[in-house]
Length: 332
Image (tube, rainbow, N blue to C red):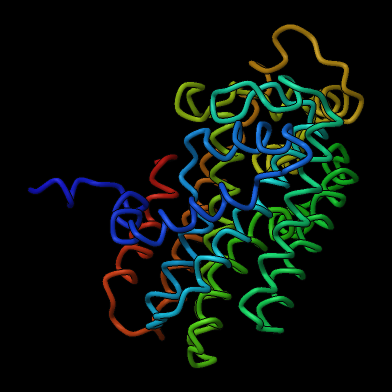
């Protein structure tokens, strides 16, 4: 077996798109500069260069190349997607009062909340500048709608995250907003900029949507089953932050009166005590919430793979199929 077959799908995609990814990186560095406010590139570089996979911009490049695009503007759209993503991370860490991201201190911890929020605003502004450059009104509509949907999803999460009445449909609405919206926009604009047939553009949107949902469900599950050195955050962070994610929603639905009182105290009222995380983990296991959440993630990954069926055979297509499998393999 050669080295290429051992590589993870996102690593194979990155290798296939080496020149495009280098161009995206150069454009990001150029556009995150600020002549008058040096803190902007300082804060941005801390997050942008923290070793992330840059999966979302890679999806834009992959979709464009798979659809036969030969022009320069897929690079601008990929950079736009990464700026939107980075801006949301800066804002999220302030809202969540996070101290760690990708295994490193967050920007709001190293600088302050004001810097994180304002630099995030700057990156949003930069993203809107970038998305205009291809001159496509449809592309601008897709990406600007995604930015609005992400913000809407984050606000919905604020009202739903600590409310035990939140059910799986509301959870899915939150996930589709805060995570899947950017995945689906990233893949969709790749097809649009390539002037792909509408059937192919819809397939790319559906793939990104399902992949994004699977990705977020996996992330929420890893909070209870992952390793800190692999995920970049501590096990139980979502519990300590009182986030009502899918595993807890399933456990609450199946809880008896005593167990529900535990969830009310720890999640709704925020009165957590020593040993509560261990109790939560026991309840999640007892009611099959973790295994059922895993099944849901795998189902969304299968939807993502099936969505690509209308697209012609292409090396990128097989990598995207493998990517959907890889996303859920982290919890298998």
